[in-house]
Length: 520
Image (tube, rainbow, N blue to C red; front, side, top):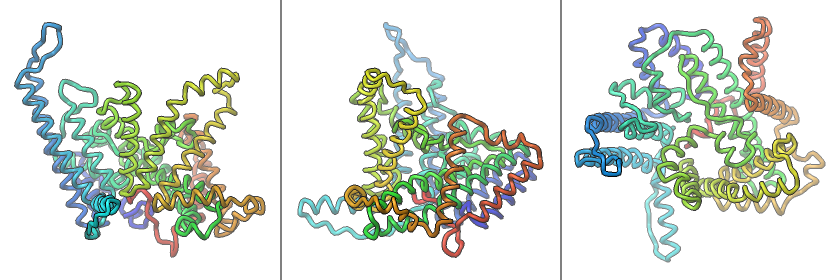
């Protein structure tokens, strides 16, 4: 079931109506049933998959919590230097905790590996053996990738790790959830189940324990957020897809300038597609009185590559930071180790996005750029001081944003192309088959279905830029809208609604189109 479908238009109001009508004590059970129904609409077998991951992490969480409580009852010894010294019993408890956490990680990541990386691993092994002139005959694996598996497994593992850290109030630690059905809802909560944001137990699970009464302000804010998400998806992302997708499908049929235009457009396509889903998820949850974390913070206003990754897919970036980068040592063990840890995180992020080497290259490029940016910072500061450049000036910051966008868009080429080799081929065509006359004589209009379609995209991009700019400046847009007189508010609502209906593109035959991040 897709957010941009008639089915969801019926499903969501029914779920919301019953949610606020039934007693508060059993509301989470209704949401759990609705969430599983939402998920198995793709494939009933997927329900068993998410149930298995949920059960394993729930049992692991309880086991870890009990071990934490047992450890808390023990009094650690202190050595002659005043440092805490673990007793033999505490050491046994720590070993058991590590064993439980390792088994939970093994089962969940093994599940993820089987469905997502089995074929990739065998094909890679086949190529490596081939390079050594050893023939390795590997059967093909036609394994269907379950929708959202990377998201709900990471969310469940984040919970388990947080419980693991619960001993003695360690930072990030929490107590386990002993109610299986409430925990199952935390893992499967339908608005953010398929493509995030990847929620933490300290946010979502705590809210599920205390359901709120219906609030008209929440409903109004949530519906407006959902409307904006739908606008991003069907007015912008899907219209841009109709322009960019044919170019990436057959790059040899287009000149370098056209490939460049498609690459530039894809930067906005993937942002609007993913941000559109996120807004629909956040808005749906808001109507139900549940607050989900923002996943984007005006990423194309970033002043550097590192700044971009603080603003893009925030829930995944923070997950890798808290559960991989910091445990590896973060920046605490010297600069070299910091850069190695950074590269590990970005390469892992690339592999998380897809079982193909071009995703790994994409992650590696962003990691290398982040490291290079850090290495060159002293040089940059020295040059700015030498030439008396004020880095806070508006013009300088505009140049920073433009340079960052160009760099990020360059990496998007490796993300979007079907293979690493094809990405290099397209890059070569862009550099050496660049026809200025195509731009000067307005030949780029031919990429679009019509001049009107191009104008719709341009106008919608202007709206996106305006909204992101206001968000970047921390202006509350919804508060400004809701602060108007009722007549003006309803005029805005209807104009916005009609614009989505009139300019929204559902694809050939008006069928709804999938969100890009569903494949991850």
